Length: 228
Image (cartoon, rainbow, N blue to C red; front, top):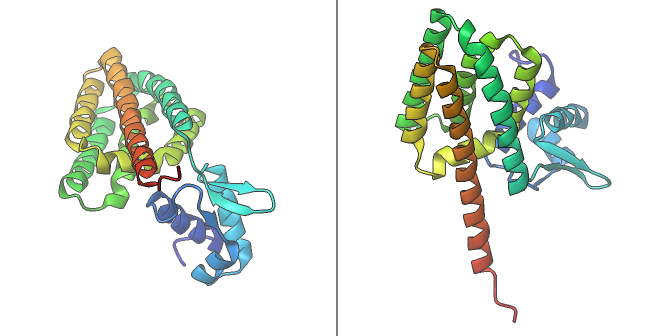
């Protein structure tokens, strides 16, 4: 495994992708012995990987029961996205005055790759990654590494829901337009308009996700047998 320093890093990276990709829905138990067999490693790197994913908010340990994928409630999802609004608009406000033409061109290049992936409906695994890398490119000139680290963690926790929103809300074109407008506002130094758009962009994505989850919960209730 030449791309990884340790077996634990390899397991964590692969397992993260499987969780975010929906193979392990929220609340799924992650059995260390089964995962060790799956990856052909001992239980030690598996446990290290699970602890790393716990720090990212993707896994939680229950006493005497083991590790489970995190199951976020609608209230927690809203909290995550509201935190994103607070921190990301703050970062963008600080970053825009420092953005260089080269950095703006780099962000535009990322956006072109993102657009191509969305338009082709291919590379689904990369959709949310492109989304974050684009936003990160705009925020980086704020030079606030601790804030960026928290934003990165929030985006990791939100990843499966961002992907769900892009897949199921039929709002891909709207998201693309908003990204291009956000880049234009940043290029033109229009800080207030950029921050207002970013806030709406994040909160509308949140409400799209909430609608999906509420719809699924309602559908599940309707399929339950009538026990009366």
